Image (tube, rainbow, N blue to C red; front, side):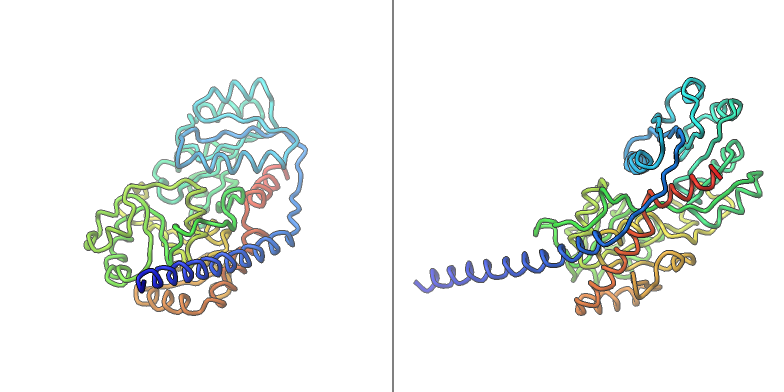
Length: 367
């Protein structure tokens, strides 16, 4: 009888806790939606014909292809879609767009770019991985009329290599994917980190493994077996798991704190940056995390403050000990954590979306 009473009591407590959790998230989700609806998102319309050349590389580049293509649809008079594996110069000769925009460009033959320019059609490339493939992109960039790079330090680099029209244009958040959501209770975590285990990240995580082992954390990405204490964190890691954008957005929404750690410009993993161009610009995850109204705890990049105000719209760390200190603080200061997350979301949705970035690009190209 005593066991039955205890069982019923546990069920009652579970119902109460579940109700309160659902109520709390419902109120938070409602506040986020109210803020989103208050944003007047007026994007300039360009009455021109644009041809967009997607990477054609498949995942993980396909979400970028989609973000740019879908954003352009509502911004231009006519949009023609193709990809780098197609006879684009031939298509351009037939369709006669006003301009051709190439994303990434690493697999797009420069002879096709030259042929398009010979038709009198403007060309632009938006490099996706600067500065990590600059050994390759420095030979591609001079073939285009306009070069757009997501790394501020690469502007001068491309100009030194013969490019005249070079512009700094970071990526953004694609709001169809990255926005406040209502994730399942089973996904809820205190902390999450999503990204590959480049060696500099491994060195950092090796120093905080003991702390993370005591926390409710989820880590996902490639190569995490490299950790010195992998077995200690094994139950919290999804090794070799590469998340798509919707799964990533759900994980961000399900976390109280999301760690962002930028890739080092001199990491030995998959790096073609012989000139050691330093990276100072925020990565795409910076915008995607903030778009989900989750507290972002990020390492410091020199140009980060051009996009967000640290301590107001996101939180920064500069060492393993500072990361631990701030995790502890914000896990125990719920309202402050949520206020920062909300401000970060608001800034993102006003300023750091793909339509905003493409508005900048088209304004430059069509001036």
